[in-house]
Image 1 (cartoon, rainbow, N blue to C red):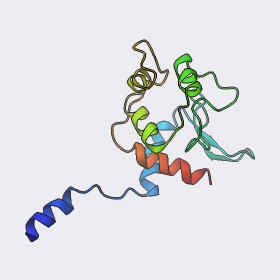
Image 2: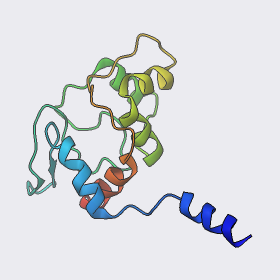
Image 3: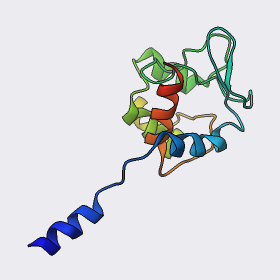
Length: 131
């Protein structure tokens, strides 16, 4: 019995630290920045993607002045909010996420980047930056 417990314990996911989220976000910063409402650059990054300050718990396509895809704007109109689950699923495959969310096989995301693991750490990192 103790061996079974040890095996089960080893299979549990390890907690992910804020440092892991910051490290993983480095790839995202090629396209995204994080800028506080007062203009403070928390993460200097690209401008191809929208600023991600406050994204945790925010409605999709919510940053004024950014040209979101038609599909993402439609998902926002249907109530898409960036919960941790939605954010992680979107990062895994943005276009497939939108196709499923909208039940529309023609839906497309502009973001081509995919991240299989670590989306939860990035989400928590962005949530912490936005406090």
